[in-house]
Length: 168
Length: 126
Image (spheres, rainbow over the protein chains, first blue to last red):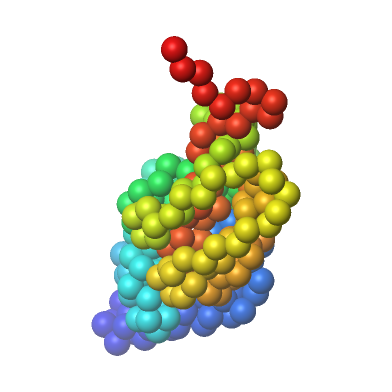
């Protein structure tokens, strides 16, 4: 891939992720539980993984989390989203590389959502040091299934449309 | 959708059920007698929770502003908070020992401890 094309695609994916998370922040919370979000921004990471490859997925996640944290002006938010985003992206990459024959984009996205929620809870625990936080774990695991499925189906739809184009 | 996807969904649901069991066994659901209020991990206030039906309200300063909570009839709830999503207020009344009302944005935690058995003795001395 020519460097200019790569940078442009990366920038596009990062901005898709940022715009999706801004749109999502206007929605009311799904459950009265912190961290129970739809996770629309993960669509950008999943598309990057399936259309452009593992390196692109990692770059999109890291840049999106840092820029998103700076835009929101919250250092705590940056720490929470970067640690959770990085962990879930690494696990999704691992599944994509090792088990692509058995698991489609849908399963990878559900795992990404579940790992993201669990990692964010662990990161919040590092900040607040209260084991009562883990009361949220069951809710966060349950909510990861529908949100992960939604993100997975949305990403698959986009990836199908992108297939015919010569992006790389 | 492949077979592995269904396995993944089943595994995540199993994790949800497993964590529910773990969490519910950690605290058997006794009524608490004391609310400990922490801001950013440091205790700032202790409020005893008796059977009194008279409402008492308290305000603590959190990370983003003030948080007001109400203690009444052995229960506690958040009534006002400077945070954005008001998830802490949405958690409603809480009376179970070991559970907490947590406001992550404002870094305020109201932790319920102790054990209050109605009609029982407070303490026994020898």
